Length: 431
Image (tube, rainbow, N blue to C red; front, side):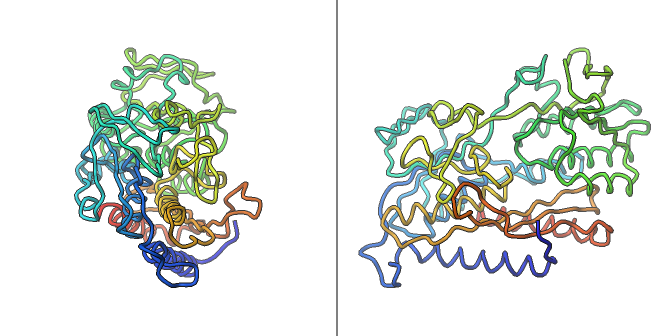
């Protein structure tokens, strides 16, 4: 990654954001020469999934052209953000702080349907819901998020997740894990089983471990966090381990090479067996391997690894025409599976769909990602990048960005920037 300072990065991403906003709000009503097209774009776009990718795409399609009918299908009336959910688990925030509804999207003219999609018929261009609706589309956007491969951890299951939550889908599992940590006795350990690559939010487990350790240090003397990891390295590792040392956090990371691979869990006995040691715990967070959300599998959109291959310039599925897959479920080669990535993909795909429905050429795609993590409430770290498509369209390439300075001079301000980022992106999605 080439280095640029924060001011230069903010200027670059700000310019990209402004350009994207101008392109997407005007592009569908204009030809490449700038004159108005006859009536702008027309058609019905159905969006499945109301998270960082789906909600953003639905909103920006309506901002692009009021002639596009947009229906968002999302089973839940309340959406809980995975970003900042670790603050709830670390006892810093309440669950309602990360809760949002879809009222503002309705105000933008999005038809919001709270139901569960049970079938996608790509040939007939229809989707069916558990409530008995059959909805036709011209273009379909799938933003189904992830589902858990419970069987990847021996002894774990969906039922076991009520006793040792994964909490990798924010909401009730977030609160459950927070409550279990709060109920720990001093001297008991918190065990985390980290997931194998690829998975949603690469730095997320280590931010969670950091904030839990911060809580234990203050309120549970003698307790520590033990991370059992099937990997030998992880995202922002140097910044995390440096922060753990600087803040004297009680964290033990057991890598794959050190015996961190888990052979069995017993949630009733509160015991986890790894390669070289068996651990007892007061509370545990078991994060299994992941795959695309279940509806993507039912729709036949996934590859043999469980993810959805897409054409990287538009995120249209390489399996089914007129179906686009954005966010964590997609194989966005070169980009991390993060909320900001999904938000950026939602905007680029909205522009591509707008063009396909009769609007102006969307132009060369650009994406951005910024990922903030808390080590303590006042010690933050981040990574940021701007992306463009390679000429051969086989990878989304990193144009440049940067990491938090290793000297720690900016860590307090990084925690301030993290709060600002979260407020801005949630406003972008839900206002």
